[in-house]
Structure formats: structure tokens, C-alpha cells
Image 1 (cartoon, rainbow, N blue to C red):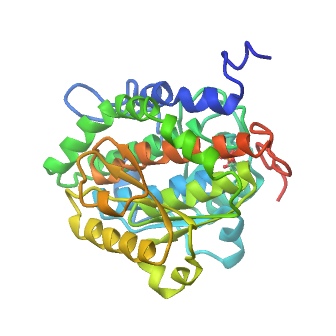
Image 2 (cartoon, rainbow, N blue to C red; image 1 turned 30 degrees about the vertical axis):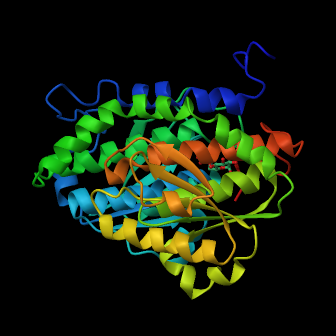
Amino acid sequence: SAAEKGGYDYFMLKEIAEQPKAVADTLLGRIDGSGTLSLDEVRIPTRVLREVDKVVIVACGTAFHAGLIAKYAIEHWTRIPCEVELASEFRYRDPILDQRTLVVAISQSGETMDTLMALRHAREQGAKVLAICNTNGSTIPRESDAVLYTHAGPEVAVASTKAFLTQLVACYLVALYLGQVRGTKYGDEIRDVVRDLSRIAGAVEQVLGTMEPVRELARSLAHKNTVLFLGRHVGYPVALEGALKLKELAYMHAEGFAAGELKHGPIALIEEDLPVVVVVPSPRGRSVLHDKIVSNIQEIRARGARTIVIAEEGDEAVVPYADHLVRIPATPTLLQPLVATVPLQVFACELATARGNEVDQPRNLAKSVTVE
Ligand code: G6P
């Protein structure tokens, strides 16, 4: 009913709008005023966490994209090697697991069969399993050694939005917590990240307030057949997520690529007026990546692409090459997905509406896939 949708036409729109609160709720009570994480709910003894020599993340769909981003954070902040694998591939290749492996299973519903089978397999091999889950008491947390709940509230729309942002928050918390219990050298960078994480809900809110041009752009592209997405570093999984949203909702051919791979194939796809969304890393921090992606944008534009550029406020280098420019607030590099994903969700949702598709219940998809 309209009341259930809180006045929005679709659950998806409501859930996109709820993201600042979902993010804030997922952080609530987990970082104290001095920037120390308290995750007592993660009932894996710190003695065990100190011994972990490998992290393996398993998930499906949008949750898998959260896992891809988590890998950057975990390896950078903890120096523990981290693999990310689609749950449906994981157990069929005889993965190397033992008592010192921490498996992180990410699932909104907690009922995805592929993810469940992957974690059962991991536990049989002696690995410890930590679930990141949005549904209290669901199967995946019940069968795991520990759980860190995301506090997105119920997600009804099939295409995941607020659950994804809270999965990212939970992944950052796990990465920072692992760093904390293992006594990783906390540089200024980590202190900044913890501070910026506690402010990130406001940044998401800010993005939501500037989405009208994105909706307009989406409507103008409703007749297109293909949209490509490019990103680097954590922007690469964001590009994959943007493409997934477009497939799920708009039923369009959409692909995400690592921008550095452009020259190894995808650039052959560029043709006159092809929309290409580019997620640009911050010009601060890893500025080498920024400069490289700016030259990628130049290259594809010279070949006729219509460039849709998602870039930090104040990034002037992209301006000459952007047919459409979407501004996002400055964040530390690793946190950028929390703000960069939002315009892609809005874009896909509006394109679906413009194409007359059912937003909350896309054809052929289920909210939770409980068969293998
Ligand atoms: C289905 C949904 C996706 C979701 C995936 C994983 O395919 O349509 O939106 O990302 O399952 O679901 P989970 O509940 O495990 O996060």
C-alpha cells in the first residue's frame, strides 16, 4: 500500500531515501567518542582473530560487490590477505581453508542458498565464519560462528540499495576491528577514516539532495540499449554494482569494467553517443589513479562516447571531458563507494520507471534465492 511505501511510489525509492539512517543505525554504538571500535557482538575470541592469516569473503549479487570493496579495506588496513569469491563458485573448486581462515559471509536476507552452502563448507574445513546480515535470526547467522548485523531495516524492493550501503559499513567496521585487535599501526589515515565514517550519513544525505539532474539524464537515455560503467580501485566494484542495478531494473545491457582494462578490449565497444558512466577516484590520496582515469575519459570521449562522470566536488580536471557531471562529497578513498553508488541506484531506478518496468519486482528475479 501507499502507506507502507511511506508516500513513495516504490519501495525502492523509499529504501534509497532511507540510506542515511540505515548507515547511521549500522554505526550506532559501535565506535566510541575516542574512535575505538566495540564489536563485542562479534563472538569470535580476539585470540582467534589475532591468529587469522587469511580472510575469504563469500556472497552473491549485490552483497558480492560489497565484498569486493571490503577486500581493499581489509588488505589496506590489516595487511591480511583477502580473497572474495562468488558463493556459487566457492565450494566447487576445493578452496584452501583451515582454522586460521576467517570466512565472511555477506547476505541481506540470510537465506541465500549458495552463500549458506559456502559457509557450511568453510566450517567443515575448520574455518571460522562471520556473517554480515540484515535479517535477525535467519539461517546464515544461525549457522555462523558470529554475526555482525546491518541495521538497514527491512528491505522489500528486490534490487538491493540500503542493505548494500550498510554491508559496506559493516565491512569497514570488520576491517578496522581486525586492525584494532591485531594492533595494526593506526596512522593518521585510520583516525581520519573513523572520523569520516561517523559523518558519512550526512554525505549520503547530501548526495540524495542533488539527484534531480541524474533522474533527468536517466529519462533522456530511456531509449538506449547499452550503458557501460568504468571505475578503478574501489570504484571498480561500484561500476559493477551500477551495471547490475541497470540490468536488474532497466533490463538493459550494462557492463562494468576496470578502467585500466579499457585498452585490453572494452574500448572496442565505444561508439558514437554510447553512454559511459565513469566513477572517478579522489584527486587527493591516490592521485595517480585519478590522473589515469581522466585520460581514460578523454580517450573514450575522443571516440564519441557520451561521458557521465561521477567525481568529487572540487575535481576540476574532469570538467572538460564530462558531458554530464555528477558531484559527490569528498571522502577518504576507501569510503567513496558509500556516496558514489547512490547516483547509480537513482539512475537505474529512474530508467526502469521511464521504460515502464516494474521497479520493486523486476521480471525473473527474486529477493532471496533459496535454491542452489
Ligand atoms: C538476489 C537478489 C539480489 C541480492 C542477492 C543476494 O539475487 O535479487 O538483490 O543481492 O540475491 O542476496 P542476499 O540476501 O544473500 O544478500
